[in-house]
Image (cartoon, rainbow over all chains, first blue to last red; front, side, top):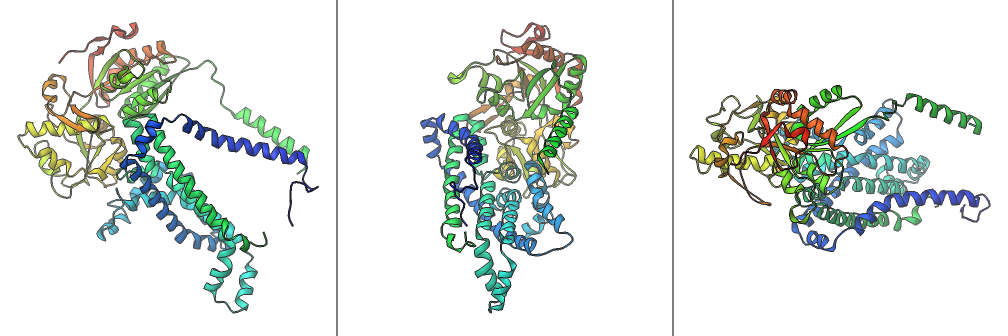
Length: 272
Length: 321
């Protein structure tokens, strides 16, 4: 059943109010960014766009956020499925635990991760015996990014899975599909949008993280760290120039991810 | 829930919120201070004492890297009543109108001294062996991890490099600086040294280049380096000049570590700021600074001709080196 603006069930007034509030929110997001862009000097932008250091920082951020998102998919999606399908006594606690990284101040999160993944940490010490370090490496960047952004994947994927009727899965079993095939051909396609929304949010959150990353990794510099360094060494113009480059790259990637989530799979949605 | 109930609930919540809200401090004047991170501990003590002596004044300090604090005023146009930095050069460099930027201050006063040193914990490698005579040999050993701040952005970063250059001359050990710095690679560097204290305490690094005041405040073991190299004594200023740090901002000559402050022209409450500084430069302020590991000047050293009257009597002209 489709609802459209001319349906008698929706009054014009309520619709206008909704659009007004929505516009306020969009303006709230757009105005600071447009202000940033408008006040940017061409010279500053050219200097930053031509700087290998600055572009390396953006590349490193995208790489780190990409790996963090993959890790979130690998570890977060199964957890989300477990939370969606099972009832168990500690479920409330586990759900709350998943949300905790969102409430932890970023610097504190960084220090807590250093405690575990540092040279003498419970994970860091054995890892360094195997040649893996987290201090000042891409691995450290990924760990910090993952910690602050994984809740988004788990929560959104869980909602995606909850929207899939378990009876559909059971029917597929009766028709002869094994459990993994059911997952691949029934559950995941139906939960796809929720999962992709979660992964997009995770990517977005990861790429912008500063406080937790900078405790573990200052060099090599991710984009937020480089932006801060440019501010200290030069000034606002150079810092905002790199910020705009990062925003442009992020925006392009989000649009790509959204297309990947919604573009191809529209016809597989549950009747929508 | 029907409409009346909802409105009643909203009204109750609003009244509860208003009743529980803290009383409005309509009369209170807020004094905003931007200060170097290493001043956090003494300033908090001094702020409380100043508030106790001055009714209706709320001191609101913010702490961070000296350059960051200066730029918050010059680039972000944040209003501050007082700017206090860990390197007196930061004030003329950023606020005196160089490079066509607006002039936001006319004077500064040097009010505290510090020394560069290395701090460590009992967990640090060779902690039981190291002392003020063999430190440069131990710090150069393989496997020792040393942390320091970025010389391109932070005073203690370039002061560390200058100190090592001076040490090479003082101990007649030409390779000293490079061999110690080899154990302080980029991965052990942070924007400001206080970010690395957690790393030291967690054993990620063994030694951290930082100020003596921080060693005393955080109760960390530290090396008592000779005053000829640790940038603590203005009488050695001529020798300090020979210690050069090559940074992305140019070659910087060593200078004694002197903390300085000023009242920017954009200060909302300049008279109150002058009163605070007078308290800081007076006997009570000096006592707090000394207790927290800083050296003090009596009288403080002033540069510039427009030092406010309330402070002027407590200062003497900066001695020319």
